[in-house]
Length: 215
Ligand code: DX5
Ligand code: ZN
Image (cartoon, rainbow, N blue to C red; front, side, top):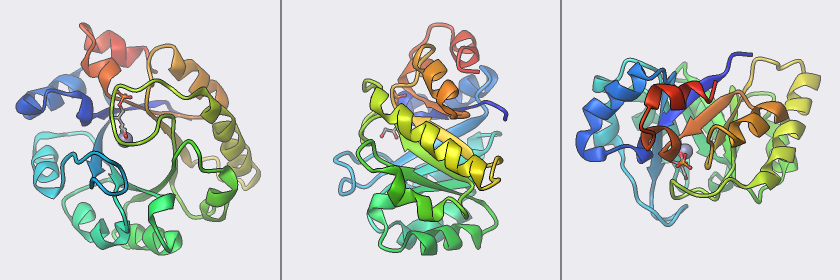
């Protein structure tokens, strides 16, 4: 399965968004990871549809939208219509996760489901037959620049094992939080293939080398 790097815009210089997008695309990022936070599901508030509409215009690569918001079904239409190629929502934030997956699919785009470090695999298992991606958070969601939580690696292996036994080898497993040139190796070994990175790649002096070190 192909390794992909999804650059988290939370780690860039937001005052220079357009140039930052161009720079990270040139450095080899495959997707742009857009973290939407509502100040309720997570403590932080980041950005929403007006900003993502501008991102879509400035970007050439697929937009990987990560909704860290309560009751995400309310906003699926908005984030799909502005041009997201994938929408990931949190299992913990949805009262009917299957309905959210179906709504994302009704727009003909990829559906991702995410779990926080403390959420067991058993809770996401019922949805592994219908999602296109599973996002295993490797930090508590809410902020960039945190330390990688190694306990999450076991969950990645378990999810990959279940997906393989279902014959769903095409499903992406994405990791997000504290991913760098070292922790990426552990994630890949465990079975992840999409690597979100914010502070590591945007903070690097040589962004080409930093993105390259994740593949
Ligand atoms: C955190 C966000 C991440 C964040 C990752 O809740 O979901 O995407 O930007 O940042 P780094 O790579 O700096 O840990
Ligand atoms: Zn994210």
